Image (cartoon, rainbow, N blue to C red; front, top):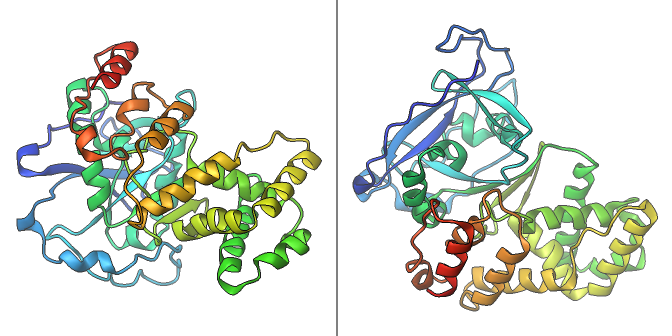
Length: 362
């Protein structure tokens, strides 16, 4: 039987946040004495402080983390360098998923239902950084979603949390519909821009395999985001890991695979993608030239070539989905210029129309 997580309010004045530690699989009963199935994910909440006195290695972010699966036959390698006295953490970026589809996990001994997209927890346990002891910030668990006042306060800290995190791990979901081929195609397209083989892919479009173009476009569409549940961060770093099932690509692959290749070979990319969707009898993914332009502009922002663009961010919020429609405003606070975000006071007690009117008149 599910039971609520018992939260202690974080001491914000001392920079305290909650983080999740995924525990090794076990068969221990929960607090109610129920024996969980052996494949149930167990984790615990830990309270840590993101303050200077806890910092021991400011340069630790320079070493990229290795997000490959660990071998069952060998212990995980030593962690490259902890930044804090208590260890280190990453932030998870994902879409919340359908509220009707849940699965149970155990948090601090309490069996709780979470939306199915948090299958990411099981996938992350297999990754080396987590087995090395890296903690994870996951808003669905690290923020008391039943406390409106806490949500109002914590959403204002999301920009800083994503910025400070050692990595922002992007979770697209479990492997399905040939997603493995899609991830492979992304890497091929990205590498082709570096080794000069991009034109050859246009001359022989089938060399990637049947359906590869359409799958790749769908994967890019998923990364670019139909949701603003986690738009509070810029994926940004070239080494940012993007996970789909067991497959891992980097944000740099995503950017070069769609923006660089798409810009250099725009007719090749869209003609092949549209052709394969048409042949498969499926709707076109929606990855259009407008979104390609948005990604190119975002790439310029991330590399410091241009300042954040306000109107494209508003357009992103307008076209995106959100679990709570108020997050079409609050979910963009980490993307819009800080001086504008500072004027927004999140309040999940307000009606949707009041949130929109308040934002428009700010």
